[in-house]
Length: 245
Image (cartoon, rainbow, N blue to C red; front, top):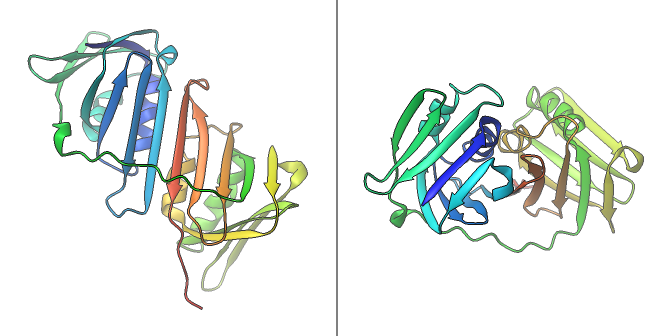
C-alpha cells in the first residue's frame, strides 16, 4: 500500500534533486518515509535523498519499492501549481502510480525495480567543511560557467574560495570565515570539479538556505542540504577532475 497527499513543491523538489543525474530511480518506501540512492550513468556523481513522512499532508504506506520514470513524473508535475495538493497512490493490480492533481488523473506505468542497482554511498572522511548560503555560492558558479567547464574549490582555516580559469578570463570568489555559516579546516584543501554537475547540485537550494560542502585534496566533494521544510535531506557526491601537470 502507498497512498499519500502532498504539496506539489515537495514532489517537484525530489525531481529537481534527482533528475539531473538519472532518468529513472528506485524509490524505497517505508511507513516512516521515502529514500533513494542513484548514480549517474558516467559514475561521476551520486545522490542520496531521504524525506520523512511528516513532509506529507497524509501518508499511508507499507514497505515497498517503486521504479519511477522521472521524465514522466516531471511532465505531469508541470501541470500542478505551486502549493497545489497532489495525491499519489500505488495500484498493485495494474502496477501503476495514480497521480491526481485537481480533477486530472494520470495512471503512470512503473519500471521493474529488479534490474535497478542498489547504490552504496561510500563513507568518505573529508577533512574540510564549509557551510555557505546558496545565493553566495551560486553567484560564483554562474560567473564561472561563462569562462570554463570546471572550477576549483578550496578551504583553509580562514576562508572558502572558488576559482575558475578559461583561455582569457578568470573568476574568483573568496568568502572569509565571518561571511560563512560555518568553517572547519585544519589546513588547506583543494579539488577541481565539473561545473555542469556542480551547478545542477546546488540549483535546487533556495537563496538563503545553507549548503554544506565537505572536501579534501583531489577527493570527491560532498554536498549536503535540507529541503521540504527541513523534513527532507540530500547528499551529493561528485568525483574530482584530476589534471595532469
